[in-house]
Length: 234
Image (cartoon, rainbow, N blue to C red; front, side, top):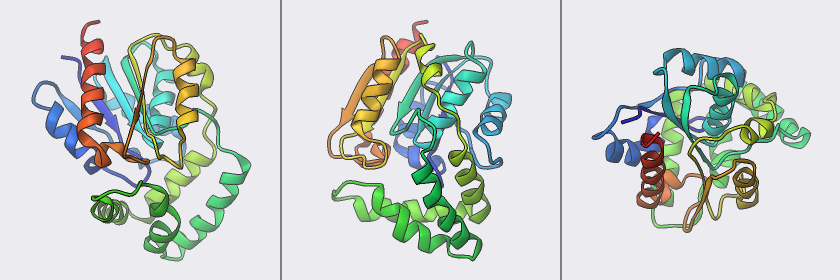
């Protein structure tokens, strides 16, 4: 079985993939790699590559998907399968970059919890019975990672390169998946990635926003399992 590397979203850790790790780790090596120690996507990708198996399946959620695309750009022969969840292949817009500056200033002033509560968490999820519980987990993950990680990740996202050419050049098994109600990375953005990657599978998960791994874990896990079957067949 092909080893699986998972990359979490901004201010998330392995808990954002807890249902998938529980379901998939019985049959393969599953590693959720942190993306927190550097302030460029290039350095973050290089660190994960340094620690990964020679060849592996790679899945990234949100910022994790952005780092996954950079890993594919740096080491295309090592990524046996690519799954991009609720993410964005484009460089950051000036408008979004400008919004990051006051957030980073607040975090430097010790207001990480306030920024997460008021400016980030409200954009994550659709309405659902587990919304409050998942939002509490998001806060726990963010506070456990802390201010330095927020600042590193904010800088990395603000200056990331466009990866559309990277996706055009990828020819392995690919899954493009998102929550139908994702307000941060829309369905249209995932349709673009699906069009860029020849032969990719597009899955839009109903009843989910930006975190389908937690909002609709069974459907998300099933989609990942089907993609991994393709990857293992190589």
